[in-house]
Image (cartoon, rainbow, N blue to C red; front, top):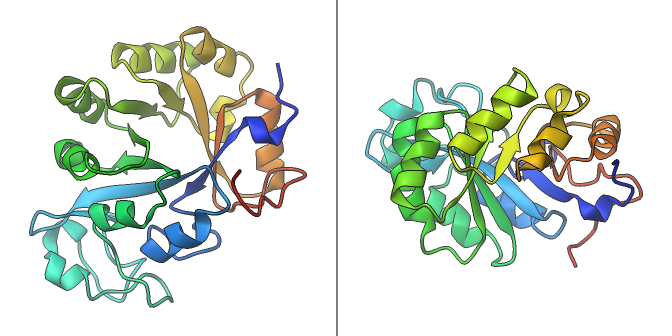
Length: 237
């Protein structure tokens, strides 16, 4: 059944609404938080061991520096700014501290080895935290260390049977498919039948959001907070 009320859907700001704010930054989280139900942020480890909030493995697109994030110490990263802003790359604990307590946070684990450290960083957060990853081994690590931690398997392609099977084997609570997979006939129904929520990525415009609403997804991961029809959602209830 298609959803008819956009308020039934969880609106998740992709990289804290990367289409509107400097992605994955404290400032983006603060500015997006009045308008969304959750923010999605990406984490990986830098050379000195800190868990940092950055999507790319390499610094070149985001900053004036070059080279892998994994080769840069925190003392170097903290002085860099993201895109054309004055906003620095934050650590995960800093990003969580910036999120209001009633804002859910989706922490995407970009490297399997970061899973345990991301879990430790999030333990003190007041927020509801959902961990997601394309790496099944990251989900397995979290399941084994903290079965109560909410987990979502990211998938890029395939079919509903394989995706649902992989997510249920890992005791996930949700599947995160791309738009084209989420809107395939029967995908959302198969996930729901298995007890999984479906949060689809990444809506860039109103047409994307409309397609996902029609498919009956539970959450829309969006680059902007003003994509749901009839909403220019100015604040959360």
